[in-house]
Structure formats: structure tokens, C-alpha cells
Picture 1 (cartoon, rainbow, N blue to C red):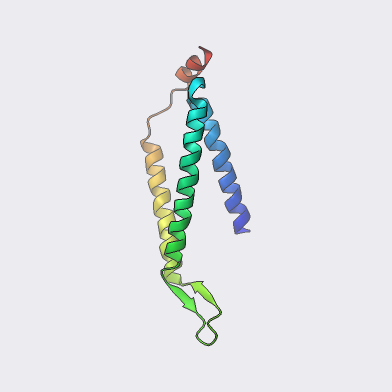
Picture 2 (picture 1 turned 180 degrees about the vertical axis):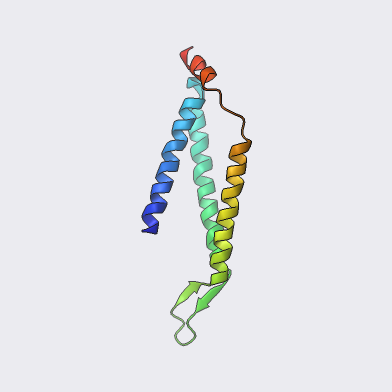
Length: 112
């Protein structure tokens, strides 16, 4: 179930991101902005996944008798979720710090 909600969030973000780019860039620069955003989005998505993987590997629980079970410990999970929460808060802070969009000027620019 977590995987489905994760994929739904990724899909919504990916679709919404490109819609925002289309409405906020001049027509002549849309393809450039889309390509740049795609590269950044996928690169940072991969970097974030690797960081979470590394954090989950910091502390492990291994079954002492057979060594078969190998899971992240509570400390590793707490560290990973703390990182996710912190980066989410940083993202909200950055989003709030962006200047306000002026849709009227964008519509006028698109009409030209």
C-alpha cells in the first residue's frame, strides 16, 4: 500500500511540475525549461534515494543464529524519517521564500 501512495505522490508531483513550467515560461523557452527541469528532477530524485539508502544502512538488525534477517534498526529508521521531515521543511521554506507569481503579466506575455 505504501508503494502505491508513493507512486501516486510521485505522479502528481511530476505532472504538476510540468504544468507549472508551461504556464510560467515564455512560449519560446518552454522546451528548454522542461528539459532542464526534467534533468534536475530525476537527478535529485536519484540522489535522495541514495541518501535514504545510506541512512537505512547505518544501523542494522541481523538474526544472530542464521544471519538471514537483515533489517534497518529503529535508529536507522528514525534517522531516515528525520531526514525526510527536515528536507520537507526546507522545501516548504524555500517555496514560501519564492517571489509571488504575477499571472496577469504572464497572460499578457503569452498573448504577444
